[in-house]
Image (cartoon, rainbow, N blue to C red; front, side):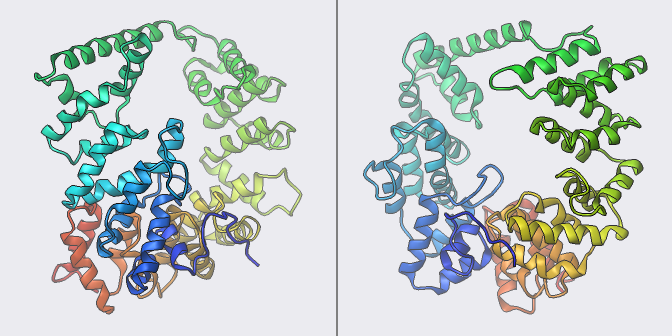
Length: 492
């Protein structure tokens, strides 16, 4: 038996809501065939409560915006979600911290942005209104920055700057907002707006102050300096570990060690990699692994059994970054070890290396690890990402049923896309099966894969390819693949 997803916020994959939450192409196809009220209810639930596990790498907004237009859903529900504190699902965002406001309204604002790009002026007006009154105003402003005209953006300047009181704290917050903005266009327009000279002068002053403060911080940096010795770099890494909360400096310390360590320092680094100072030990382990030191693999195996979670994690991370014949040979040995013979974590990281760098002789180890991860941790385990890639790279055809299970059940649209890519290399039925559905997927890379593989014998495929080719919001990579299939000699 496989472990199912334990995320209680995600509906079963066989339901319309579950399909839409996952961003699957079948979600759109089922929604268009379902009663309109049911489809609108499922779409509303997704936009109101973002189903993504990581909004920074998973896409849903264009997917939901396209379905929103297909269903002619209107904007009343999105407006209610953004502006009404007595909305049915929660208490609005006006009193929420910034991060919570982003989580609550970010997806809805992105959907509005795509609707505006399709020419929906009501969506554009909602974004402008939210940028002047909503808690997550910076997100709305970023959406407007790439879609609104200059006059529309200039009109927002006074209201946005009024958010920041004319105090030192307010000026600091204003400088941070202007400097850290994802899209600088509105701030540039406001700084050049002759109709509001006081606004332009204030932005100039806070910008100069921000630049001066950054310059001073660079001069006073407590980090490594030219001339530091190996011991000083290790002490700096240890000092970070002892802070509350701890600062994990092993990566930065390893880079510094690469610059200052000489052959004569090897004994000191080996001693640190076996020592009791955890911060220094992690930094030394990583440095030795990245330099391919002959003792690095034994040190990693020893550290993987350490009682400290920090040391164990650093050891596994150091090994995962290694390449070369010796590391691959050790990975094969660890992957073949009997259950319980090695410290926990080593067999998994070994299988990950074989999936990334191994050859045909490693297919059994990768398949075994893939089965174990799905069985023990379910279809949303982070450990599946490299293993799914490896099953495709090594063309492990007997993994196709397992990959189809991951494709259907995972809540991660990124992992589903990786499963689709692996199926393209392992499952002969992919072109006429999942590839057709993937033309409606929420992820750009998955739609591009589908455009390359979907069998044109299905009448829906050619029509969908034509629509993607004409869609101004579609990504360039997808449209390039689509044009290749629609060319006279491109079809299959």
